[in-house]
Length: 491
Image (tube, rainbow, N blue to C red; front, top):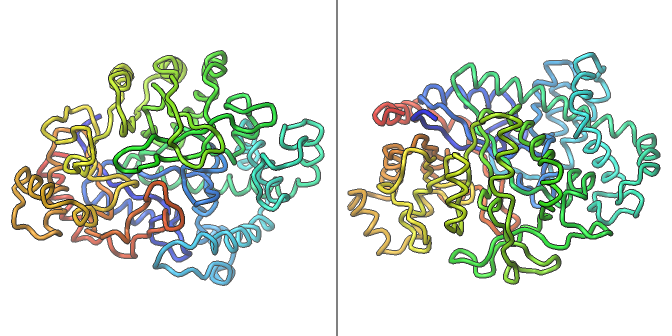
């Protein structure tokens, strides 16, 4: 990985006329500004269709795309919608936080109008055929889910829950139109995303995608492949994923994702993981693997517990998985999210994998963080961030630091006497100046925004994943300022 820099901004945080960021002209304008600012990477969050809690890390499929990201304006240009229909169905406005309830109630109605006018062609047939390995399960899963008023598949009647072939054959006939509707959504998502990615690549911008280590319990992946997961005979999880208590969370983090049956994966040569990562490298240039430490050992919490306090550690697959991936796919560009509780075994796995890990500048000056993230300790082979989607913005983070931490930070950076807004830029400069091969700055930090622009606060529900950048916020002046720093620090 060459010395370079990029910006972290979720697709949903882009400005757009219809209430949520999508693959629209605003996305291309953002890419144009990245290029003006001399950036080499655009890092995004997972693109999957979100369920309860709206988290991109709890998607209905690890392969499918979020239909909210399909640009209605492009469908108008293709004759599948009218502007009046878009304005009537999605009167969201270009500014303000995402209202997912409104999206759910209006976006599918709009897409259904486009679907009813769509005439399948050879390109569509080719897409369906090439993606059948996941698309058939996903589209049927979503159709049945709709028919069951959205309840989790673990609550379906036994023949459907347990994937009985005769019961599913009946559902395919009864729900064929809705199954086709979900295939249509994925076709449009795929076309628009790949066109946007091609546009970015032509501008010299690579896309850093994000793959959660776990899949959601309420997903087509878990429903169609129960043998891959720690389920009992009734498809009930025996244990679920999370993180133990630490200085940031007294009761830990209870994610609720089903754990993998790693011994089964090993018997298959890790076939499902190879297929999953192969798909990722078809839609991204670089992949960040979330919660990398879980491949060395993972935290197992008894199913039904309300907190993560009673969990315990179990051994993961380690290099056996990554050796199989490398043998099948060759060496790929991967970033390991190696944050959290790190043992020597985790550090050894990171070294053996050869993947660059992550360094978070906010952790460097946070007394609650046990690890040493001070930039003078970095090596070249890492990716430096001011913060991630799980951290507060720099401006809000500065409000959280105690006086002792602020004093140490000022002494370290020489920022004593600087106003808070200046300190934000001091931390950005420190991140860009460090020896890490790649430096990635969240867009909110370049915009010097406060806590209202935080993407996610772990272990909370209700106000996450909703921030959107204001239209016109990424100005030419800001691009020039970022570009100047990029040039100074030879990124």
